[in-house]
Image 1 (tube, rainbow over the protein chains, first blue to last red):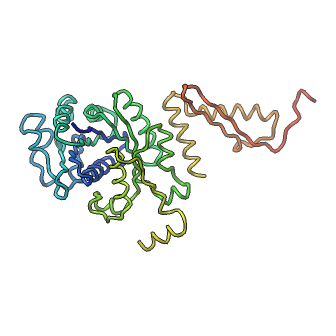
Image 2: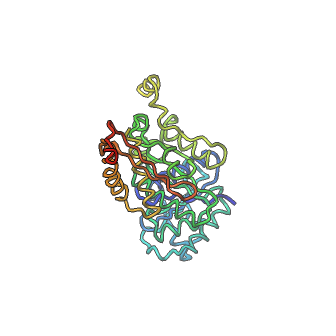
Image 3: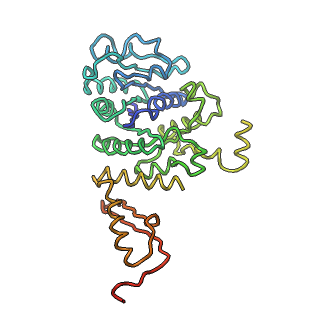
Length: 260
Length: 78
C-alpha cells in the first residue's frame, strides 16, 4: 500500500500539473514506483507535461466505462521505468466519472505503487471533490500572489472536512531576487499565514518554463534541486525546504550566478 | 517594505473571508478613530494603522498604532 496524495490549489495557473509531474519524476529518481493520475477531466494537461500525449490508447474514461483494465491505460515514462501516467478523458462529460469510480481506480493503483499523485482540477466544485475524495494526503500548491494565497486558504479550510492524514504547502514560482529585495513574500511567510506546514518551495526557473520537466534541466538547476528536496520531504527522508533566495544573498553568490 | 504591506493586506483578506467581516470595516473604524483622536492629538490619517487578527482561541486581536507630533489641550481642561 502506498500513499495517495492530491495536489490542489483552488486557483488555476499556479502550476499544479507541473508540480505533480515533477514531484513524480523526483520521487522516481528516489527509486519509488509512482503513478500520476490526471484528475482534470476535460481539461487534461498532465499527458502533455509528461510528453506522453501521442502514446494514449485508453484513458480514465475507458476504465470507468469498462472498456479496458486500469493497467492497460497506464503509460510508462521513457526515462523513468517506475513512473506511469494515467491520462484523463479529454472529451468526456465530467459527470460520467463519479467520485466513487474515481476512488476505486485510485485505490486499485495504490495496491501496486509507492505513490499515487492526483492532479486536481482548478476550482472547488465537483472535480475538486472527486480528486480529493481519492486521496489520504494533500499538497496545496500556491504562488506568492495574493489571489493564489487567498484561494489556497479556502482550499485548506475545505480540506479540513475531508479527514486528510496530512496537508502540506508547496509554494511555486518564487522569485529569489524579489524575495531578497522584500518585494514579495517568501514561502515561510505564506505557510505561517495559512497555518500549514511548508513542504516545498520551488523557484521560478526558465528551464522548467521551457521543458516542463526537471529531468530535462541541468543537474545544478535550482528547480531540480528544489523538487528533489520536496520529494525527500514527501518521502519522509528529510524536512529541508529549498531556499529560493539563497542565490541572491551576498556579493559572492551574485558573482557565482553570473559565472554559472 | 512592500512585503510587509502585502502580508498585512493578505491577513485582512483572509480574516474577512473567514469571519465574513466586511472588508470596509477597517476603513470605517479608521474614520471614526480619526474623529476621536482629533480631539486629543494632531494625527495624520496615514500614520494611523489598524490591525485585526484572530488568535488560536478564535478571539480578535485588535491593535491600533498612530503617530502624533502634538497633544492638543483637552476640552475639559479649558
